[in-house]
Structure formats: structure tokens, C-alpha cells
Amino acid sequence: MQVQEDEKEEDQEKDHHQEKNSLLRTPPSPFPNPGGILESVPAVSLCGYPRRFMTSLGFTKDIFPGGRWLVCRPKDYDVRYSINPWMNTAVVPEKALAREQWGNLHHHLLRLGAWLEYVEHADGQPDMVFTANAGLVRGTDVVLSRFRHAERRGEERQFRAWFESNGFKVHEVKGGSFEGEGDALFSGSRLFCGYGFRSDAEAHREAGKLLGAEELVVVQLQDPRFYHLDTCFCPLSERLALIYPGAFSAQDLALLERHLELIRVPEHDALHFVCNAVVLGSNVVLPAGCPETYGMLAQRGFTAYPVPLGEFIKAGGAAKCLSLKLEQG
Ligand code: ARG
Image 1: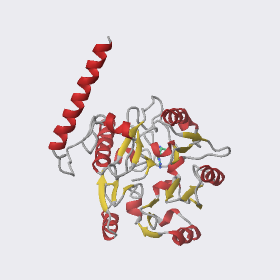
Image 2 (image 1 turned 180 degrees about the vertical axis):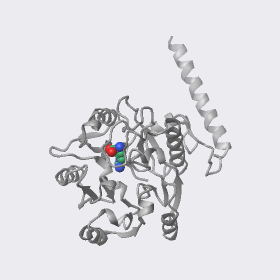
Image 3 (image 1 turned 180 degrees about the horizontal axis):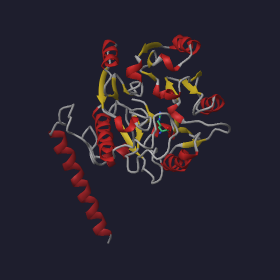
């Protein structure tokens, strides 16, 4: 038995080296690869090493300049209730198309150097694909979300289990609701927080303290269509952010402007969720159909990678909602 085990291990070792060597000889396919929709968790990471080998090394910024993110492959994604103005149970997502759009987003993140972690989609929690709402992470600490709506509360247990089994120290806010990175975005050690629809200002202050944020910038969201901060605001660097000004009061805009230079996106692009962007260094993966914003990004030295996400916009989410930042690139 022991011998067989050893042999098996040796074979695996051999496979591993062969896989590694052949992949090192074969350069990865040129990017972008529009046909390259990945349907399952890839066995091989971007750099050509098997994922299980890379996992044993841990996340490395040099190898994964796009950072480390948590995603959830859509298995039971749907619109079965309405908890924001985008959700209409009579206009449900087309499941196969949603899977394809998610696959394409996933492909772009991998190709741009992201290290992805996967949480299993629990049945009966159709919004669980929006992992930005799992919590807010800093280092190995996470403040778990407490959802405003009962419809999403079942996700809390699922996300907690994932964080605990992946070595995170899980914290909770004592009062109010808190919807994680949907409403709280780090830019360096400064935390930008939005309250009013889903999260409470008090919960943000508690989360900021638990995670050791150096400074909190708390603003009130004004427009129910932009009910999470990440639907109308996106830090691109420690100095620059995308913003839809219509979602904020003049006073809060001035407050944000004290900390960041703001790239103001037009309403048309905002309604296509252009601020719901995943920033991987100077590359930005964001919803399709917003050429004006792509142009403004290009002027600032960013490359926009538009991806169609219409089936997720039916639930009120897009690229950023579908990913939670675990570690920065
Ligand atoms: N249907 C989900 C909800 O209303 C969408 C969540 C979008 N997530 C986000 N981070 N903006 O809760």
C-alpha cells in the first residue's frame, strides 16, 4: 500500500515536471483571446505552473501582478426577488449567456495576472456570485457582511465558512448592516465608505477600526439606482478615481475631491455600470458599451478591457461586484 502510494506520488511529481516543462516551452496563447472562455477552474495558472503547486507557494505579487481575488462561478444565479431598482423578476437572466459572460470576465482576470480563489455557489442564494458583498478584507482579516435584506442573509454562513477554511480571521460588526466591498473600498490605507441604502455609517466605522484603516472617508449615496458605492465610484490608484457625480451630494463630491482626482463619467456610461470596474494595476476590466469612459482612462495611461455583462446588470451588478479583493498586486 505504502509502495503504491509512493509510486503514485512519484508519478504525480513526474507529471508535474513534464507539465511545467512543456508549458515553459509553449508560450501562453496571445492575449486577448476572444474565444477563450474557460468553463472550469484551470489546472494551470497563468505562469504555466500547476495551480496546486502555486497554492503551496502561496500568492506572490511578482507572479500575479493582478492581485488575488475571490470569485463564485454562477451555478444558481438568477433574479428571484427584487432588492434594488435593477431587479425585475419578470426580466430574468438568460442562464447560458450569464455563464458565458462570467467565463469571459474570468478569462480576462486570469490573463491580466490575477490569482483567483473560488467559493462554491450555494443553491438557493442566487446573488452569491456577487462576492464583493462577502465582506471586506485587509491582510488576513475580514469583516464579514451583514446583509440588509433577508434574501441575502443566507450567504453570510457560506462566506464565513470559506474565509475560515482559507486562513482568514473573521470579524463581525455589532450594529447595523454592512455589505463589504460593495460599499467600502480601500485606496492604500484610506477607506472610502458609502452608506444610505445597504450599509450603515456606524458599521463602516466599526469595520474600519477592526481592519486598522488609517482614515475613513464616509459619503451618503443619493440615487437608489446606485445603491452600492462600487456602482458609482472606483479608486484607480491612490490618487485617481472614476466617479458618477449624480450619485453624490455636492458636499460629498467636494469631500472626495479633497482626497482624489475624480474622473467624472457620463450618466449613459454610469447606467452601463462603468464604475463597477476591476482594477489590476494599469489594466481595468469593466462593462462593455462605454467608449467615452474608455477614452478618459486611456488618456490617464490605463487600458480598458470591456466585457459584456448585461445578464448580471439585470441583478444590479457587474465586474467589480463579481470579485472581492483579497490581496493587492
Ligand atoms: N442583486 C444584488 C443585490 O442587490 C447585486 C449585488 C451587487 N453587488 C455590488 N457589490 N454592487 O444585493
